[in-house]
Image (tube, rainbow, N blue to C red; front, side, top):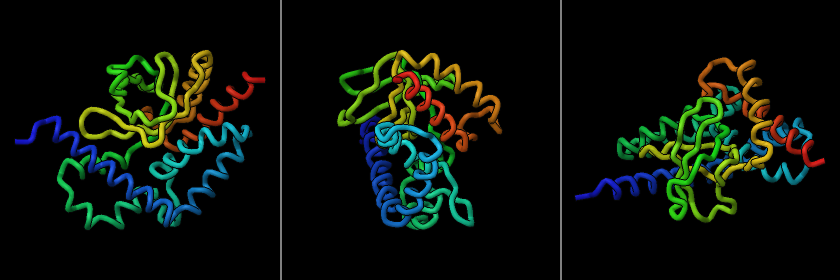
Length: 221
């Protein structure tokens, strides 16, 4: 009999296999489109090359899951699901349910509250805009692990087991600037949101990142 922990381990393994396929789909079929999108976004931010490189992974995955492209105005993730629907329908129900939940993602900002198990790389995060607590399980291979008190920004993916994962780490906002930045981006969101639910406002993420990076750049002068 399969234990609950083994079941969840297998579920995450299957989901990461799908993410690997999505990445190859992105690189092989939509590389030009995603690079063009990011180039336009970064050109409007007026930030250093170093900051461009640091925020690049977050913009790639935001662009993949959250930014509609083309005449049909579908995200690259939606297109991937559509083109692979026959294969994905053969996946077990729990995998399909998680894949559907990824249709409504938005890159966010998160306070690092505390590690649940630092050795196992499991952390508790608090959503800056909604106050929801999220349990993050990450790969030790990440170059920069979360630290209590700082704010992270990036895309979190629900994994079907009450935990979340990250695809390529986060952009880490310096702890001494978190309060100032949060006090700026929350009012901006409230003024421009089309829904009080943060995930239904993915169009605002580039602007929130822009203000964040500009404040960090100004503080370094």
